[in-house]
Amino acid sequence: MGEDIYSLPLFYYMIGVEQMAAKRKSKKENTETQKNSTGLLPTGCTLLNCILSDNVYGGYREGSIVNLIGDSSAGKSILAHTTFAALNTDGFDEYEFIYDDAEAGAAFDMKKLFGESTAERIKAPRYDEEGYPVVSDCIEDFHMHVKDLLSKKTPFVYILDSFDSLDADADREKIETALKKRKKGEDTSGSYGTAKARKSSDILRNIRLELKKTNSLLIIISQVRDNLNAGNMGSPKTRSGGKALKHYSWQEIWLYLSKRIKSKERVIGVESIPKIGKNRETGKIREGKFPIYYDLGIDDVSANIDFLLDEKHWTKTKQTITAPEFDFEGTKAKLISYIENNNLENQLKDVVQECWNNIEESLKLDRKKRFE
Image (tube, rainbow, N blue to C red; front, side, top):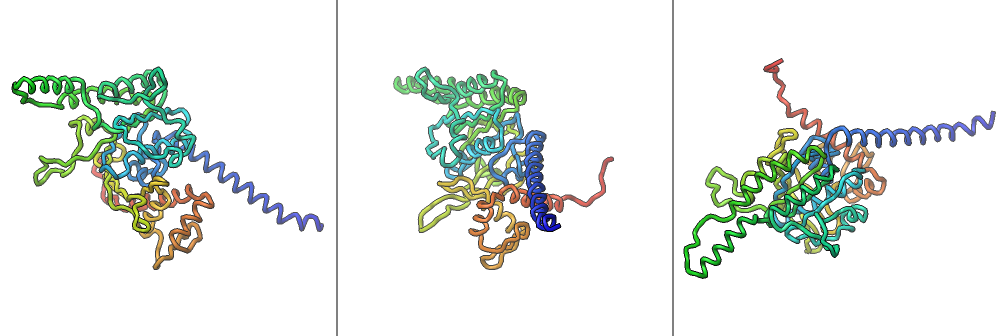
């Protein structure tokens, strides 16, 4: 009788452990099912996922082209690489990671920001006989690199950084001809750079159809430029490459620098604002914000907390945040530590998803359907 009494607490404890283990297993299976059934690839930023697809687990559509346009210091390259890290973490082991550093501008510590296993998977488009990476120098190179990958019939994520650094062979020939004419004192008037726009349209149309067959993703980074022909009604910002990029992109993300984050009067990061210019996934035009730190990358936890506070899902009195789902009250710094130390990042995503869904539901028109 005594043994039965003393074994009861242990018995119930073991049931609790088994239930928690089953819950974790179920959650993992649900995540895997959701990952494989939605056809979405993670951006590495929870809020950007929501902005693009209404889904905290993924924002980019498999088999699509994404155009990421932004200021020089807005974090475009880090955001693009964070997609590699998210894919690596979420178990997309079948994907190749290709980084085409056409402008030779990536100088950050890959292993520190994205993890050693992610860094090891990132490759150049191709390598020469001595093993040195070869990147695209012109639009024709880029086309060849992507076509070589497509011929393998396996999925990949290809980041072109950036589209602005590429030109076309025909444009180069025009420039060389113009230089020769100038030396001879001949007329050099004419249009330049038009071949790239024409080539881009043909290449992107061809690539778009092929990407779908392997569920691959092409992220093309572009630099923001001042639109000198905007007038009173046009956008003050634009990007190079003509209309082909906008036309063939499934999603168009404009990334703006909101502010620089300082500590002890020194800049340690930036706050970036993604604004959606085109979104074939949901048709919605949304925007958000997230911090990027030089020694951390995108601070997803902080961005999620700020979102929940901004939307009044959680409350803040002076410096004390009340987060009912975590039975927590304290400062933001302590809340971040609590979430990270207890591996509650996915639970935080669930809270963000619930809040996001409630907001989107409230925006729907309460009207009679026009058609049945």
